[in-house]
Length: 116
Length: 112
Image (cartoon, rainbow over all chains, first blue to last red):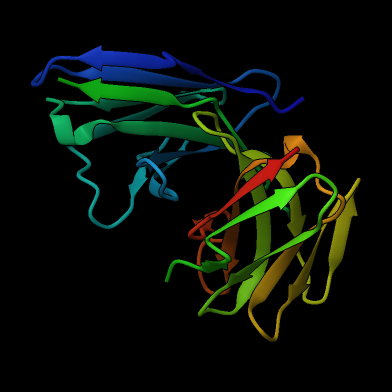
């Protein structure tokens, strides 16, 4: 159980275009999903917290107009990188949180974005 | 604010033991441990919720010293499959209880 999928797993796009990444919890409902960004050989940096039916909460320094997050249902959250630039190239990972006191997070396989 | 992990990297031979430490500057509500292989998503290992709690499965265990604001991950009789980068994810007191702040990471390489 607790499987999270991401699509696409790998994408290359031209500078100035937008890219949408989907995150789905396959066998459980996730009221909260998180979006992380990870540069090579670095730790995961939280970008935003996504709650179903409400606006996402962005971490300090993350541009909400550039990284649009939509949490349309209890099993789907999307991240759209708008007007992508080469510096947006990174590994984007989502996680979905189970209910309960432990707040376990289960991660998707990640999306490798390369902007040329 | 990011928890500091030590060591940064370690190379082991199969069967050797390792300890990975995670230290926070803030009092912690919980500590989560993850292992990430290159190009893949982190895989959940375990959560420690109470100060002094120790947990483990197979040959991987962890402790949580609430007073010292730190946690340690113990890998015994390491296997090749243990290779990867280990991250602690911390939930500080006073913060949102569902948000993780990840540590700096420890790269572990197990050689035959």
